[in-house]
View (tube, rainbow, N blue to C red):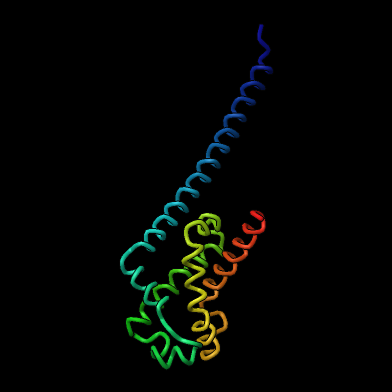
Length: 167
């Protein structure tokens, strides 16, 4: 005859194992969904880089010619004005500041962002840095676009680490 206590114990063990298996499966599903969403978001942002309006904006920004913030204001007018150059500059700054914010809050995988945006982000920051730093001083806004700068610094660190490991 089968012991009823043994049967209950086996039944409880199977039920417990089923609950644990369900939790593990759910955790893997959540992790997969998070990666899928991040990949989709980065892909969409990457497509932004190839959109005509972004390409026009980045070319306009990279082709600006100035020595420092004062020279920039003299040639292009006040920062954040409504000129086409300022609209292009704002488009670039907002894009990379937004990406930097998401990376900083760990809502985007930095490795994925680095592989897609390293060169354009670094080139953009190196061009606009004097403008941003001058604006920060002029307006007493030391944190203005700090996530863009954060993203640049992190990308530069990653690039240096990769170069050291290759050497």
